[in-house]
Image 1 (cartoon, rainbow, N blue to C red):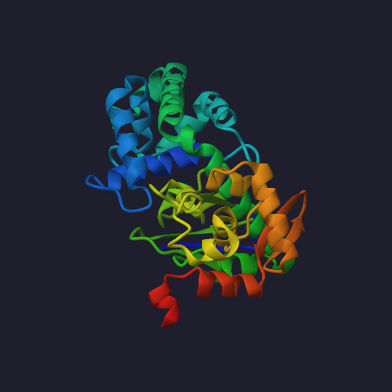
Image 2: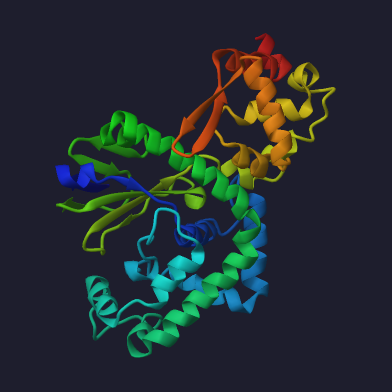
Length: 340
C-alpha cells in the first residue's frame, strides 16, 4: 500500500490534468507487464505497438521510461506543465531538466558511485541523453499512439469534465472517494492499493490527479516535485482502443440490433455511447461519425426526452435521462438477457 496523508491545504488544492507523456509511460508498462497477449481492450493496440518497437529504431530510446531495475526518478516523466499539455510541451520540460534536479532525484534511488549503466548518460552527458530520450518518445508516440489520440483526448476531456464537476459541486472528499476501486479515501489518508509499502505526508503542497487511458488499473504516484504530489488512475473510456469497439456499434447490422430497429443505427450508437456523459466532439471521435451527424442525433434524442444536455464551463455534456437508461437496458440489451 502507498499511504499519503494529506493536510488541509494540500487537499484544498486538488486539481486534475491530462498527460500524453504519462500515457506513453503507462503504455510501455502495459506491454512489459504482459509479455504475451495484452488483455482486452488493449490487445489490438498492443500488437501494433510491439511492431513499432521492433521495426522503428528511432522509438527504441522510449523504453528507458520503464527503468530496467524498476526504480526510475521522476524527472523522466515530469509533472504536466499545464492542465492539458501537448506532448511537445512535456518533452520541452524533459529536455530542459536542470542538472541539479537530475542529481537530487537520482540520489533518492541510487548511490552516486553505483549508478546503473542506463542512468549514467543523464549525469555525464545530460543534454544529449535527454534529447535522445525525448526524440525516442516522440517517435514512439507518432507511430504507436498518435493514430488513437483524437479519440483518447476526447475521452480524457470528458473524464476531466466529469471529475471537475464533482470537485466543484461536492468537494475533494467526494471526488477521491469515487476515484477508483483501488483508491481509498479515509480522511486524511489517501491509500493506493499496490504491492509496494510506502507512507508519507503531503504538507502544504498540491494534489494533482492524472487520468490515464493506458493505466489498466495500475496506480502511480510521483513525489519528487517539491510542490506537487501527482497520482494517476484509470480513466474511463479505454474501450475506444478495442478492436471492433464503440465505432463498430455505428456499423452493426440493424436487423439484429433491436435498439437500431427502433431508433436507427446511428442514433442507437449515440444513445449507447452517452451512458457515460460525453461531448459532441468526443462522441464523433469515438464513434467515427461526423460532428454534424452526432449533433443531429443528439438533438432528436434530447427532443424525445431520452437524453439531457448539461453545460459544464465552456463545454456541453450529454447523458441519459431515466427513459434513455430504460431504452438501453431493456431494448438495447441482448434479447435473451433482456427477456430474463
